Image (cartoon, rainbow, N blue to C red; front, side, top):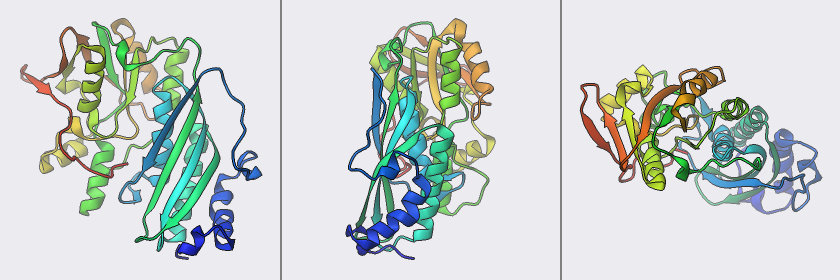
Length: 326
């Protein structure tokens, strides 16, 4: 079945679409009440985030826009040390979209929400004129402990920089799909709750965490260096990169430090806790290639120590980069 404007009219066709696709996969006691808003149990401190997902193509190696929307939302909450609890889901669907593809995306979103331990509590569907595109907007809510204070301004001289795995995977997967290049590169889109909860449980003093998305590692670290008014020094040989992604980037002239991920985090903690943090992350799903990649020093900006001992400045991503990566 193709989606038509009638499916967004608010009448019978809308009800049929909601019942046959969204309610079928998102069913839970809160959502099934079908009220104008959801009433849920709360917390004294909450983290809230919102995001819109417009990735092209909708389905790619290793994931799809549905999985991506949950991972992106959940990970944003986790980076503040929050326990993700609830997600809202709004779909904007262009007429001509295939209902089978839509259902595949919705099911993937539902499965990923279960994996991440969050409940989709409300949503909205709009159908607009167009050529079969699908866009998703989400809002996520998580609970934050009273003593948790994980922010970009917390970096201190002597801190260590850790990443949870290989850089550039999602960027390379999306670009490969658009260019019709056959390879084995898969998106790394994944919820990172297990590794964050494990570090907090084991008492790692997390000064800051960020997920590495658009703009890549170089952009994220520049933002942190500016926020804390310090210098971050990276060791190039320590930055984990999949061999196939490295070759792909070299052929196309791409800088790994400006290629995005959707299932990796950068964490900053005191030097004496860094190896323990790496060991914890490596024991978690999606963290087996975690690595120490640098340290915080006096100064400003981000510098990279090359394999021959030289230094180069790492800047934020300039220009368009790769649009519609998420």
